[in-house]
Amino acid sequence: MSITTPAAKTAQLLAVLWERNRPVVDERVAILESAINSLAATQILAPEIQVDAANVAHKLAGTLGMFGYPRGTELARMMEEVFEMTDSLTPVEAKLLQDWCVELKTVLAK
Amino acid sequence: MRKVLIIDDEDDIREVAALSLEAVAGWQVITANCGPEGIRMAAAEKPDAILLDVMMPEMDGPTTFKNLEANPETSHIPVLLLTAKVQGVDQRRFASLGVKAVLFKPFDPLTLSEEMATVLGWTD
Image (cartoon, rainbow over all chains, first blue to last red; front, top):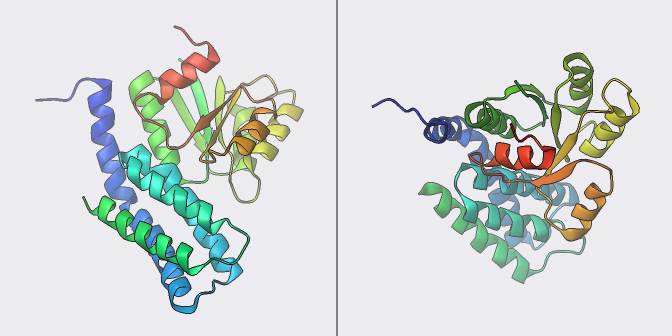
């Protein structure tokens, strides 16, 4: 059956765009994961890495919900807020980031 | 046919927004991946509205908007800011710039055009 409604056509094209943009999303998640692992291992994060992580989390927050991953947007937004803190990140925050990153990967794997 | 210019440095946002406005609303969409290119396209193409990202390298959305406002060729074009910043202080700052509206990412591709049409008073 051919797809006729604008909504159905949009949904179909969105799925195509998601697959096409998936490598960029995976790359951004990997950047977050690397920063979080570094923080967890050393308890410090270089300022430039923290800024990069905040920017990447911001981009993910702005796009994942658009592709049907609202929880992905929520998790990315929480990570962005933590990375945007100017104070040094604490072990508690590092653990939160680790948990959110694991959940984000799980959400995106579905 | 309505013509909308999308200015955003993110490929996926441009693609999904364009898809949404073209497929759902039937509008013509043109895109630019940075502020300076968007300013040039706005002057050349005279779109009916501009969807403008806030956070872009080189020239951010608010600066791009000020440039559009300063040019008599583009100052009349309504601009809708698009942002993933959800904190109230950011929202108030963006709204105070004088843009037509502030829309938020992530948007729903199926309702983005409806949201824009409402803000712009495009009832046809």
